Image (cartoon, rainbow, N blue to C red; front, top):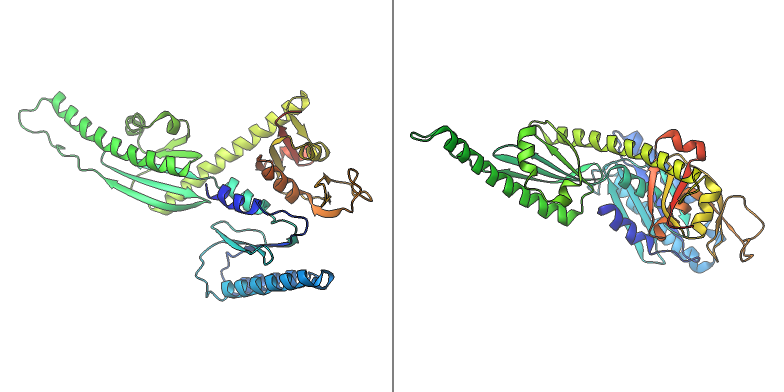
Amino acid sequence: MKTKSRLKGLLKFQEPTDLFFSLYLNTQWKDEQQRERVRIFTKNALHTINVAAYPPEVQESLRADIQRIETYVEALIKQTLQVELAGVALFASYARDLFQTYGSTVPFTNQCTLATHPYIAQLAAVGREYENALVIMVDTESARIFEMEWGEILSELDIESEVPGRHKQGGWSQMRFQRHIQDHMDRHHKEVAEQVIRRFDQGNYANVILYGQDRILASFRSFLPERIQERIIAKAALDITVPDTLVREKTLEILHQKKAQGEREAVTRLTETAQAHGLAVLGLLDTLEALNKRVVAQLLVSQNFSRWGWRCPSCTLLGEQIPLGCPLCGRELKTVDLKEEMVWETFRQDGEVEFISDPSLLAHKGVGAFLRFR
């Protein structure tokens, strides 16, 4: 999956002496004023960084990064870079030979940070909000297969199968004629299923959506293996000739409904499990403790969660109320964005992160976690 591969490439960076720029931009601009706002935001954000406060060798690296970022953003705004995207995420560290950009069909919130690791919460949230989907539209003699990720259609395959014998031939019984038609429809559906299986196995799709008439879909599904059947989240009637834009719109509606339902169920399960003293915790303090113990299997965090805390650059301990020194090793602490640190730490521990829009989690300070063990 694109999201996991993107995150994996960034998660390898984390040394206490490293510094990384993370820049998120909303590039869904419609006029020059919106472009100018992005330019001003980037310029102001970069120039608030006190480069002179760092050692000389670090200053050189930071200035190189700032120059590269400003050059890229200027090209983006002037449209010398042909990028038709709603959002751009950029990660840079001259010292670590990193300058990576990711485009999104979904806008990001403007954000610019300098920290000891890339800030990945927005990137991960968009990936969760717009999961990948394999969409199949099928009738008796044609089909369309769409591969979708990050809310956008990545590819489309159109299949046309010739189905002869639509008109009954002389001397044929009605039953023989129907068998003839069914046989050709089965061949068509088998061919489509083979293409679906190939794409499903290559893309590891989390969601499969079918569009067509119930009778035809029932026949087509019989050619799909169990591993694909298990990923079918919806089927709906949609004319096979509709434009791509309508296919995308309908599919996003289904994915949003699935995510909203999944969020409610996850928060309910988290609450019930934690209250029964099972493998779950609620609230910021208990979640931070679980992360420090490296026992988090899945972090649930509200989309609008915002809280500052601390991190020890030596032993990596996380906390909320900032003490004079690390309670574990006594070293000086760094003030950090706790949402970013919790998301980063969960992924570093091979856990999963679910970003919750449903307000039910706010009753527990907007955060909780399922545990591997206690």
